[in-house]
Each structure stands twice: as C-alpha cells, then as structure tokens.
Image 1 (cartoon, rainbow, N blue to C red):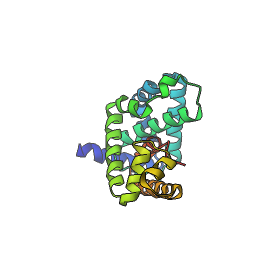
Image 2: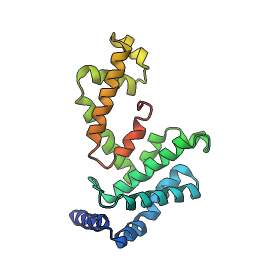
Image 3: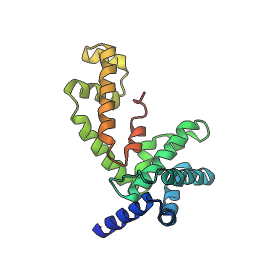
Image 4: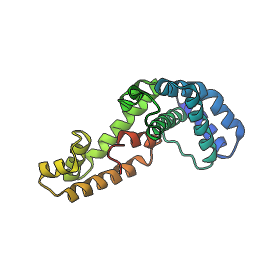
Length: 197
C-alpha cells in the first residue's frame, strides 16, 4: 500500500510538472474503469465518453496546481461522480426519471471506490456538523434530515425565518471550509444540492 502511494506521488509530481507521459499513463490506466462507473449511472455511451474527455482535459489544464489528499483513483472516481451529477442537473428531461432518482444512493454501489469515497465523505461531513454551535447544528439537521422549510424550522425552534437562513448560511460556510482540504469536495455538492443557494 505504501509503495502504491509513493508511485502515485511520483506520478502526480511528474503530471504537475507537465509530463505528457504521466497524463497518458493516467488515461490508459483508469479510462476503462472510470467509463464503467459513468455508464452504470448514465447508460449512454456518447455522454460517458464526453464526460471522461472533459475530466482529462480539465485535469491537464490544472496541472501544476493539483493536490490530492486521498488517492489518484479516488480523486478520478469522485470527478466522474460529480460530472455525471452535473450533467443530470444541467440536462433535466434528457434522461428517464428513474436514472436520476436516489442519485446519492446509487453512487454508493457504482464501484467499490465510489462506495468507499461516499462513506468517507459522509463520515467527514457528519463529524463537521457535530462541531457546529448547538442552535446552528439543530437548524441544519432539521433542514437536511427532516427536510423542513425555513418557515417550519423557525416555528419548531421558536426563532425568526431570518435566523434560520443565517444559521444555514453559517453551517454551509463551515462545511465548505471543512471540505476544502479533501479531494471529495465535489461530491459534497450533490449531497447538499437541495440546501445550497
């Protein structure tokens, strides 16, 4: 495991230095499994190919600035999941409803990597939520877990709607800061997509 991590660090170093052979290695090594991950969700060959092409182009554009806290494999799988979700969000009506329903549940079973990334992210998010001030945490949990409206939360906690909005904003700012240092930050965007402004 340690050897794999060292190899990945060396590969990432070469990639960030602009070594095209490192890009080719990443593409040849991971393309097929990333395609399978995308296809299991989208069921459309052309869309999956476009998604992967976009991921590798953007990855190359960001060379020199890529920092990966997990593994390259996890980082790439997370990128696929985010891109698939983003495609669904931008192309509502293109796909059958059953492909979009329970998206966050489906990604857990796309690949072993997806499941692991999802579980790690949820654990990280839940730990971050527990660090919120009590009232802010209560508001956020009512919004996220019970899916109450701002008005319903205000009535339940006997506070103003404006206070509810303030607590939600504070909670999301805290979570973004907490997630900013992990590769799975993109994945958090669709776990909280209904709460984000």
